[in-house]
Image (cartoon, rainbow, N blue to C red):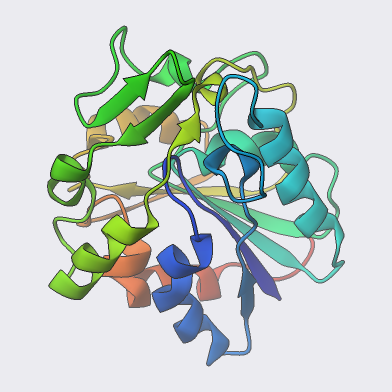
Length: 237
């Protein structure tokens, strides 16, 4: 069994965001991998109006999923739910999808469909450059407020500007409708409030709620690890 973790928007180095939970899973013989998302500048090309977008992110994640036929749990965080909706379609090795404070889009929906008419106050959008990012001054209080000081300090070093085009590019297929799905609602999340998460979670097969902020795999890795270890490892019938 392996876990493929797909990180959210405006960050890079998915392995760092995931490492606390990954270390616990490894003790149980479960390995993890976190694909690089080109729209966050992780594949060489710079993000921007002409830079990589959702299609490139989907291709990068799908390549990792297809590289190994080992039974796989896909863990999608935040924006990662948009990417994995397409990337996981038809991948027979996927046993379960876990969405953490994330999205289960239908075909034709975009990331911007899940937001308001104006950018969230914790985001800085540069329309001329074609990028957006999380504001450093509000990042910890919004997304890492329940994490220890070491994680809060290190987290700022893993922020990234992202291509703005991912906000409006529609999903063309939905893997979450093909495999069992669990939604993890983070009730203390200040970025995507619990009420909104519960709306998204109605599309999942199972829902679990924990008192955690936006990154429970950093603040409560044992809880997330135990959830993943409890999932069935056989092929869905």
